[in-house]
Structures are given as C-alpha cells and as structure tokens.
Amino acid sequence: MRVTPSGFTIAEYCQQMTEKNIVVNRNYQRSNKVWPAAARSFLIDTILNGFPMPKLSLYQKTDLRTRKTIKEIVDGQQRSQAILDFFNDELRISSRGNYYGKTYSRLTPEEQQSFIDYQLSVDLFVDATEDDIRQLFRRVNSYNVPLNPQEKRHSTYQGPFKWFILQQSSNYAQTFKDLGTFNESQLSRMDDSKFIADICVAFSDGLISASEARIEKTYKSFDQDFPQEGHYESLIAGAMNDVLAFREPLGDELTKKYHLYCLILAFVHKRNPIPSLQPIFHSDGHGVTNIQATKENLSRLTEAIASGVDSNSPVLREFIEASSKTTDRQIQRAKRFRILCEEIV
Image (cartoon, rainbow, N blue to C red; front, side, top):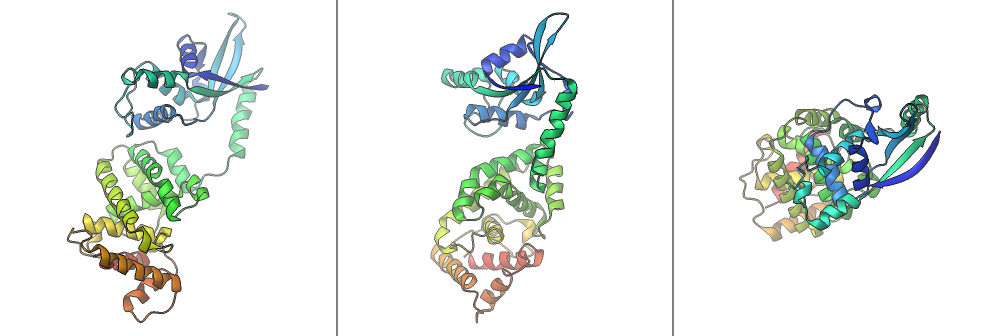
C-alpha cells in the first residue's frame, strides 16, 4: 500500500463527487448517525473562516471491467457530503457568526471564491486492499490519545447543547487563558468546555458537587432540543463582562477555576436570580449597585486567600476554609457562592 499526500480545491473535489469519480462507500462509515445541521454548519463556518479541517482519506482503485479509476471516501464522508451540499446551495449555515443564515449563493463573490478555492488535504491510498484499509483504522485508533470524559461527550453528542458549549468555549478560551484559569494544554483538552457545561448544570440543578455523570446527563437531555440556549448565552456573557470589569481586585486567586465557577454564578444570580440558587442566597435581581464597595470586598477576599492567615473575620475564615480542600464539593461551593453574593453589593 502506498499513501500519497494530495490536495483538492473544494471546486475540484465537488466536481469529482458530482461526476462520481469520488464516491461514498458506506462500508467505511464508522457511525450510522447523520450529522445534524449544527455540525454541518460548524464545518462550513470553519472553512469560510480559513481554519484547517482534518485530512480526508480516499482509497483509489481501478475497475478492471470499465478501466475507470475512482476514489472511495474512507474517512470524511459526513464532511464531504456537507461540503457538497453547501456547494450545491442545499445547506444553510445555522451556527452563530458572520455567516449565520447564509447559503453559498448568498455569500459575496469574494467569499464564494474563498470557499471554492479552499484546499482540502487528502491522504490517497493506492495499491491497497480491503484488509489494508481495515488495518488503517485499527492502527490509527491504537495510536490515538485516550479521550477524557469531556472529549468523549463531544465525540458522542451532536445536538444543540454540544455546539452551544463549543461556541462558548471559542468565545472565552482566550479570556480564560488571560485570566490564568486554564493553560494552553488544558484548553486543548477541553477543560474550559467542561467548566462552562458545569456552570450550565448549576443553572438548571443548582449547586451540586462536580459530577461527570451530571454533565453527561445534561448533554443527553439537550441533545435534541435546547430552548434555553439564548438565555444561557446571555447569562454567561453578562457574568463574563462583570468578571472583566472587576479583573484587578480578583488578583490571581479568584480567577482560579473553582473560585471563578462560583464567581460567575454569583454575578449571574445577583443580576438574574436563578430559582435553584435562591435557597442558598436570596437575590433581588438588582445586580452590582456599589462598584467601589464590591471592589474592596473582592480585594479583601483575594488577600485573605493569598495570605492564608487565619482571620479574625468569621466571613474571611469561612471563605478560606471553603477554598482549602475538596473545592468542587457541594458544601464548599455553596459556602463560596453565598459569601461572594454577599460581598458583591
């Protein structure tokens, strides 16, 4: 078997698919699930924004009877079909962004040119047997780094909640890195996606201990329909704006993952009371009414955590204790959340 790196523009690739020189072989389809609109839209948005997409794999063979050479799509059938559908003006982009609601015909001439000139990277398998292709999948899967639970969720689910989390992660990844909440390695393994999903769990279920099972259940619950999408997006955006507005008094302590989790929920709850959180702290929905006092209160919490010194203040002492161990357990989360709500005035 020979592997030849190759490439096609989208125009060339779609022409060959239309002429049946590149064809789909369902025997190579590793999943029978059809990509939903959100996944297809995200792929086209990726291409239009000039980001790379994973390589396609084609198996080239010649039919001895017809003497015609064809290429079967070994890996990338869903991607190929989405690209062809958009090329044929049969797919409308539903993901939020600059191209929301557009079909190919509604792009500007410059955008259309950019799309059809986009280079698809391809591995072309020549002189291969069916056993070679079978071995290919086995070997690739053997060398892959095991997926963590969050990566597995994003491989398993294709519904609106998965794509919402992915969009939110894209919106705030750099902010999380700038805050020091996650480093590049953690972002690449989707720790920020898990973090945002965990916040969404709190919106619906209140403060519970960190739970992979509960996040999984949320993905499953919203895999077909996610009517809260706009509302959750607004809540997160408002809270992140508050975090950035109070960046200085947060220091390096309150931007740590377990603190930022409670801080985001506190900012959300102070402005938009969440029923499941009212038993922990009753919010009147007035938000931040005294910016200076809030800055001073947050600075005091930051200094107390950084020093680690036992404080004469019962509030500071409780906050330090709730930040010292088992930080993702329900009782510690609830204490930190309540105190942060009290200090945001």
